[in-house]
Length: 233
Image 1 (cartoon, rainbow, N blue to C red):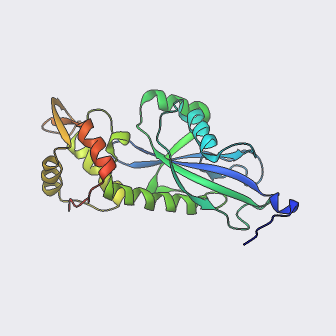
Image 2 (cartoon, rainbow, N blue to C red):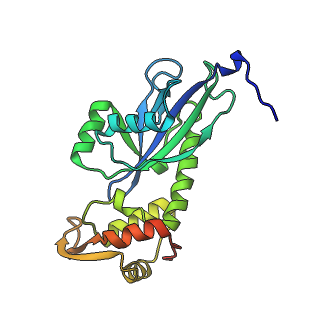
């Protein structure tokens, strides 16, 4: 089969967007910014960038994430291509989207403020420009599938965390509640966690301090590669 392109058929722009998820200990967050310039000036958008004809979309996405966060070691995963004919009113633009999960810390937050990005709860996402709401929905479903088959906490939780924090993370990602005893019993049975011996008062209302755990990195990496069936209900 012969497939030939006419010169005018190459007049299509390429863009890339990165869905960035974070977790603050209570809520799963999504990174947004305000659009500068037309079209949709002032509207909320997900982090995005134009891809030049001599650039790989993955390279541009990594550079975008590096500029936003000040780090280049986040793991990016390709989501999908979005190519609806009228997704951009200016002309034909095909968007190759990615997503990643990041761990919140003060240095990251300082960089986000400088770059004028804002966290919003994934359950409170406003109307976004272009088809970015559709991309976000796709990313949330991908994250949900990954949570069921891969341990995602290493990239979202701090080095030491409470059992409440990891349960809350999975509840946010899967949009469901878990029985506290069953969740903790099965998670400890997985031998994925190490009790650090440290304690913390999780809130001013807490009567007793909570144990702090960390991931067994070797087991975590193994499960990340092999996968597993997440059943903690």
